[in-house]
Image 1 (cartoon, helix red, strand yellow):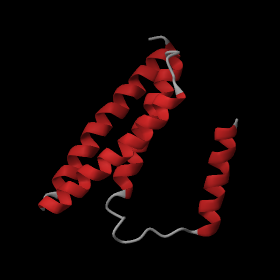
Image 2: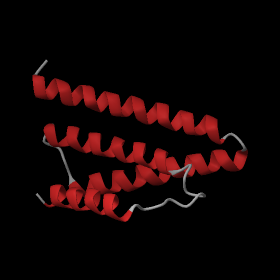
Image 3: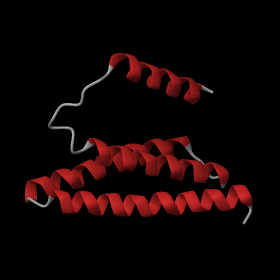
Length: 110
């Protein structure tokens, strides 16, 4: 229940405040969002499989975001930022779709 309330408060605050992202942070934000989505889908899958652990979820969430942002940062420093960003998106996308398929199978028992 708290999570739903926090989500609603966050969305409303975002709509009212109109936050801006600093230019130096802009390349990392989409990758961080995709990494966070990977953790959320993994957490939902774990919940449906009855193996969810809140500590593991929080660590996974933070670690996914930090590692993905670090890989993109490293790519920028090496001059191959676009290639590594694409690689991160592909890998996390595969994980998201894998978790989504497992969630679908669990819900529809197919």
